[in-house]
Length: 229
Image 1: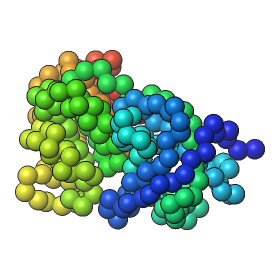
Image 2: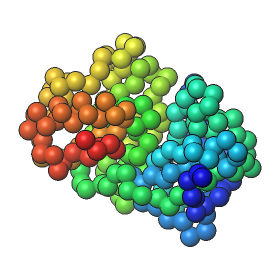
Image 3: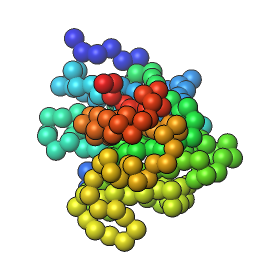
Image 4: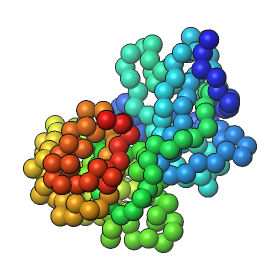
């Protein structure tokens, strides 16, 4: 028996943001509400996907009349995300109620890798909608392989300006740092260990960044990750 889902919704549309990341817009159930940083569990409403369930962060605001998910597509043809990439508008998905993945607690630094930027987008957008000057009290350290892998570069530039620092591991370009996010880089950029740190990316990325922050003297309560260690 598969996972029990309370909602069956239609896919409204999809758009490739780069070679392996797709933005999905799906139907929003009547009365469905979510907060910035929340996620949901999802599956495809087709035979063969009964046990294929995964969490995805909702990457838009509750004021929109749809739900938006930004998902990296796995190349394995039997994976859930590969199956999602083959869907057409009108196909059905199954979703759960939203649950807290990240809770915004106050100003600080967002540290993301790849699609790890997705929970932070609605948080930043929500702060801006409230009239906050996001770049005055927040910064972003964003790791990718190449410039083409950077998601929503214009939105990030618009909201954070020079407070958005890109780190590329396979490309050397102007106005970006080369390599990976490591202890030395964090130490050179962080001047306040009592701000909040929101970290999202692959499990090993989150673990390494958290260890570095703790070694710098950041209190555990100031660090949020998507995975619990």
